[in-house]
Each structure stands twice: as structure tokens, then as C-alpha cells.
Image 1: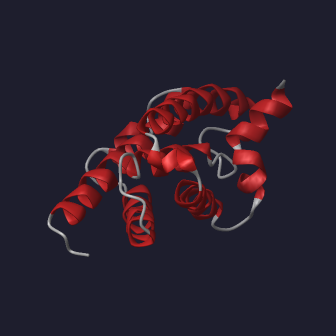
Image 2 (image 1 turned 45 degrees about the horizontal axis):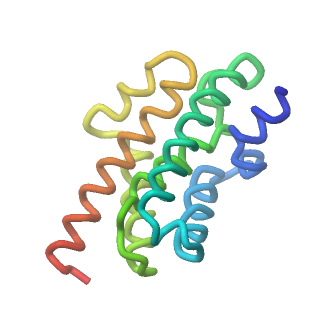
Length: 150
């Protein structure tokens, strides 16, 4: 069972990449979003996002005893954050790229309570900072789309 938890936490193995695993995991979701029906069917987007969030909370909490709290190998949180960023966004490559840049900015810089969210215990803390980063990135991306910057 721990093998399954590690596979989920590492987003199918992406977490084992030594450098930039979080960015690779977020970019991998952008490719999935851009190339599948997931991005065009709102109920599928919401359902998939909720499932990834739940699986992330459970798996990140489970692997904590082996990997430590918020290990670099845990990247399911970046996938969830990117999913939140792109919820209900029109499928355009420039939106995927902009959303990715915004999400990674908020995830790395950790402003406005994002850093504080990491302090929650177990899988909740691992996932919460990326959920907040995803929300901030989503709000800004929607604003960019609404004012038609591109």
C-alpha cells in the first residue's frame, strides 16, 4: 500500500526528478489540460481536482514518516495547484503558459499566507500552500483573460 501512496505523492514518479520536479509536475498537468477533454467539461475538471486534492492529502500524509514533511519528492500538490489555476479557463496555449508562470511564482515566493498554510499538519499542510497558490494564480489569470491582455 505504501508503494501506491508514494506513486501518488510523487505524481507517478515525477517527484523522483532531482531538480525542478514541482515545475515538471505542474507542466505535465498543463499538457494534460491542453490535450484532453478534461479541460472542456467543467464537471470533469471539478471532479478530477477534488479527487487529486483528496488523494494528495492522504498520500502526502502517509509518506511523511518515510520522506519527511513536504519532501521534494511530493509533487501531487503542484498538480493540484495547477489544476485549480486552470479551472474553467478557455483552452488556449497562452493561458496554460501564463497560468503555469503565475502558479509557480506564487508557489515559490509564497506571499499572502501561502507560507503559513504549509504549517498545517500532515498532508493538509503539504497541499494547502499549493491550493492557495493555485487560487491566487487563478484569480490573476481570470483577470488577465477578462481585461483581454491577450
